[in-house]
Length: 544
Ligand code: G1P
Ligand code: ZN
Image (cartoon, rainbow, N blue to C red; front, side):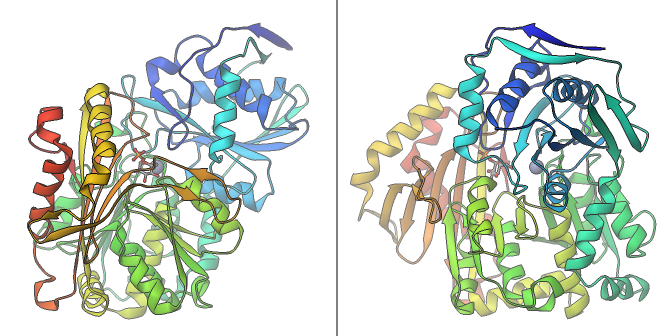
């Protein structure tokens, strides 16, 4: 057993995107590729000698092989202790929870989130910092800069560690602790939510739920919480075993990909409540009986009802939402007399606001919701929040949502994604939009008058850092909007995201079908961005 210094050459494509470095598995399988990026992280995060990090992943293909490499690199780089999730499993929220609970230096999470897995699928690496949140932009940029000049990495030549056995192992001077991350995470949830009330709900015999783990990381956590601590019947959790290829499904909890759950919730004898999470457990989808709750509405409803949940009954300090997320939460913030912050897309922008105590709840339209209990979005947390509301209110999901619309108005909302576009045509489309901004101001499209047309930029109110080019916003008088941006998480071609929103105060017109309610805006978006002519596409690939 010895430390080796291995010579390497830089790869030019290791710039992290919206959420870590995400590439095809085959890219990560190239000799030295993973090692270069991990060494770049170790080289720039400061003093690491003797410190503790947490390590694990969402169980996707290549997870275990990559973990063995990283464990040996951690030992060779002088890390004192590495905590590894049992079986290599660690959800993104659990990583954040463990970093904060044990005051760790940080954590490495192996995940490509909601992207497909398997040998031909995607893989990814994220580094979370000591507050438990994703690395801020200037940190990921420093990983990238380092990766462009790296010429050696350190590796401890040692046998593989058994990831399936709880307990301590040793590589050189480093302790490798295989631990059960489910216990820490479930304990945190127990402190935030009214577990007794939820237990009663399940034991009343009048309530049923189905939770879809999508064969990804949350299965073990969900079984321990719903079927274990809350006494829900066995079988409440479906697709609960993490599989390397997610059983062939795309682990993104939305109406298109969570097909099995959606079928159950639309069936004749549908349960009262349905929910799902993504590959690494930070996203959530909430469904009632034959009813879908948009993530933007979900954030607003959680905020409006937070007084019913023990962990939040003391009041909210503020709310934050990503810019493309609907403005439903803004209305709740106004009613509560608190601030609603609008940040660029990506959870990393919430970190400073949470650390400074400026916000309690945060959310993104992309099925991400969370709070100051950690520094990541948290899928199961959102499901438990809803479950706590259902137990406290004793009303169906649909009624809770409709009552919310009646009180605050409804923000009809949908996102249209055009996937696998030629990068040149996608960039051309965005350039054209940017050039059109000035002439769009004041222009009419039918009844819609453009009030603001800009390229969103954000100055962080805590550290003053400026982020520019965060999405084209076309805001119409009366609070309707169209937003255009390119994805920063895809691994194939470019993805155009078109976000559509229309505010409806008239209670008689709030129960329309969403796509119908947005049909004028859909046409306007196509005209303004010339989507069809520039991309050749007639239809979005995914509508959420
Ligand atoms: C997408 C979502 C964004 C989310 C990110 C990571 O990023 O849109 O809200 O934070 O995944 O889950 P995008 O591909 O749009 O850059
Ligand atoms: Zn995720």
